[in-house]
Length: 326
Image (cartoon, rainbow, N blue to C red; front, side):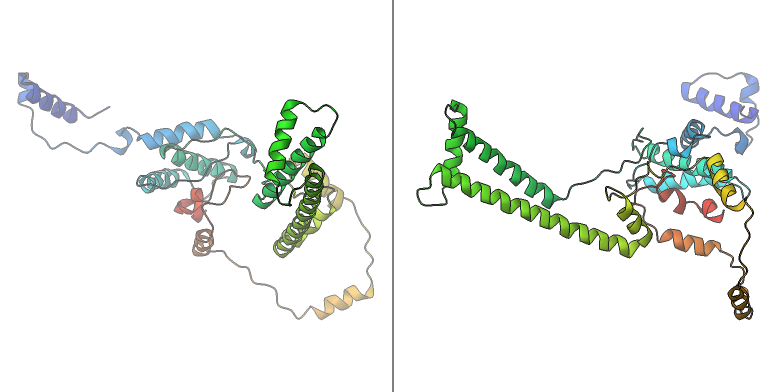
């Protein structure tokens, strides 16, 4: 509720605009300066209302079931929106906040930024692993399909009773394939078959070369994933669907099977020799990660990269100082 002096000031301003005679108690009211509205009495801004709406919608939801947030498109309103959302996050994030609540606030803030930036949030909760066919492979495949189609038409035209449409298409093909001097239909058909065989060999050669290139690149990035993909039957990379997060019960059962069973170790001589040879090594000092180091590492990341299992891009983190301080 507004203070009485503010209500009186509003009534006088409205009356003067409308030329209304005010009661004596209002006309003689002291012209006291209007006190600023307390922070608690101020109505929430549109950005704060939108943040609360989205946070109420996704708070407590499994991160794997949240919609995947898209790339932030910058315009002249994006920076003010980011600044407003960062102020909201700063007021809600504390040093002892649980990781689940922190993720919920960051996700809600990133989703609010996209909404206020007039960007739609996809309702798809799964990260699709779309296998994109290279352009060179599509071109060669289309040529092979076209040659096969022409061979089929010419072969059908050589039958006893070809239809009129087949004859018309065969004449068009024969007129297009006039590379030889006065070629016959049989010669053109043989030429197309040789061309088909050459294109098939070219496609197979290109695929083998592309596979080697991908294996070399993957081996240089991660040897573990390279050998894991070699062991799979289809040699396809592991998708997010295959790498589902295990349940707490499954995790407990797995580690209990390893650490919960007593094992008698073979204390051979080389263990003591190894312990004696490393006894002079100094214990590694505890390394404290500073805020500046975290900020520097986050600033090196790219905003345009696809989000991971947390479903939001890096702009939800590197623009919030309170998130980095956690």
